[in-house]
Length: 592
Image (cartoon, rainbow, N blue to C red):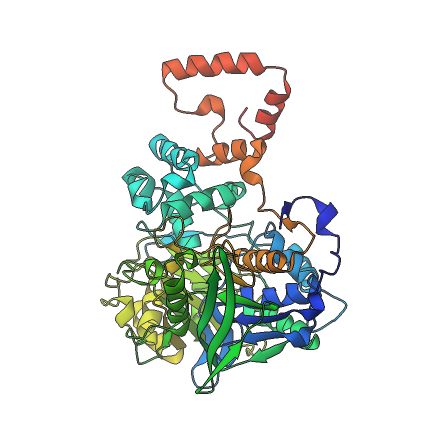
């Protein structure tokens, strides 16, 4: 396996790997971890040219899609557990979906539809942060970073990853940084908490440095037509079913027995439970196993308008499976690092609110500058409420967000990043609130008159959702805590999804899921085609200089707050580069 850039290999088709027709594949899990499982199956079919009827997908749930769900539950109503933000440089994601036809027109790919839609209706946030009951933050649009905070960002970026084992974000940044709008934008967009991994924070800074200038308006983001389950997962499932891939639902993989001979590792047996019946499956060297280890949405519980979502839960099957694998070999990672001892001050709650009462529309229009029924993307990602004790975030996608959605229904997705604080209007922790109470807190913060709040919330259908592991990707970690996609010496077993380790890319993204799937398939089948490397913006001088401009709230080099010695040094530098190509670059990035 190797990486490539440019379109030479991106547009090429690999030759059929040796013995591809003799291979069978068993994929554990079809959730966001699931997208990884489905992507692995698609790469096996498209690039590995393995017969589809020799590919088997085991899924614990009654449907595939996992974390990328969006569903109309007949008993509860519309449910969204989350949505993954996407951008143009998700290289492996778009490599996959260029080959997947839409459900409406087989001559149009999912990528085509996505591209055309986002050209016609680009993302652009009118308001990124509100406070004081629906009013835009006065400094919204500025990053408000002090010189000290910028230096701390630079220091983290320049620190090698191997020096950040188990380091937390609040161990590398001071209060200056946490008081900035940059942190407010960053943490609410990506769901970072101060206790999260500094190693992952560094990866994000490097991975998305080309978006520093758009943090304020989120214009770099791209969104699907409907929820991601309907827009991405369903077409992918149909593609796989059309190629005769076998789906086995209501199936729990209890253990995978790995036999070790010297440095070599081979999966030899799968122990599983299908519809409550225990079975086992013996494996040969030609049987490939792809495991989605761990899950951020496992053990999810739901409430309703009158009831909170239960907070107690057993450990789920994917964590149990990973524990059993890790007990066989330390190369398979350390799952306890991610799902045990998660801090109380973290995000575990979201809610899906379905409104039919149009009285909320003027308040949404005031914040977003858009009619939510126009069919255009409404919030372009989250609108964050700075003075919310829960640090409540609001996201309203294009309406309808579900194909079944009625014209008079408006769906709002809410999430609270702080689960240990009482609300400002409902004086309870978000984890203790019913759907109607979470809805009331939202209505209060967008400025709905208090004498209307209870009535509007009662007529809405609000589903609280408790996800105990939703931030587990970000737990502080060290090298070896996540297994390599293909562990050293493994001949037929690979890990895929956001708890597998690949270099440079960032977790909690669709791209990471698809990248690990692609790497796993290409490694185990020895496919001779380059995998698109992680976008190289961190190595682009123009991007670095542009980030410097925006980190300083659009100040040129001569406008920076420098001391006398620094000013002398800058003037000498500018004289030296005058009339050179470097001066042209500095001007192009607005630093001169």
